[in-house]
Image (cartoon, rainbow, N blue to C red; front, side, top):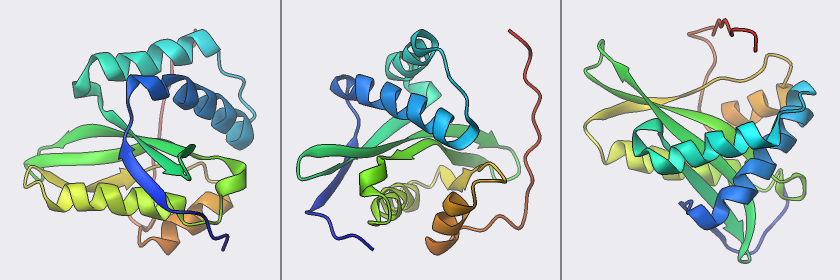
Length: 156
């Protein structure tokens, strides 16, 4: 594991928008070889900042430099009468991987969940071929044993 200077996890601000956009473009290509349309991602990221009901972003910094980000989106669970927070758009810059940054972001979110009675837990989805990410998620205490995610997306 790489040792970094102190890591700070914080809510993202509008000053972080370009970093988040660039991170999402990089993540989509690295994980799925998808070249996303930058202007669509920009509008999508800005939509989260313009409507907190869509979620929020967290940012990891090390030595004052942005190192990673993730988005939390809420989903209502009638089974639990509470929110479930989905972790999405998780990205850590390549030079900062294997340093525990995702684990720190995850712990930050977990502490937030523990402090809120209206939130019951955390979920995320991962591409089945992204074995490295699955190992990271297992290391922080998550498991993929219970659900499989299915989807349908309309064509553009």
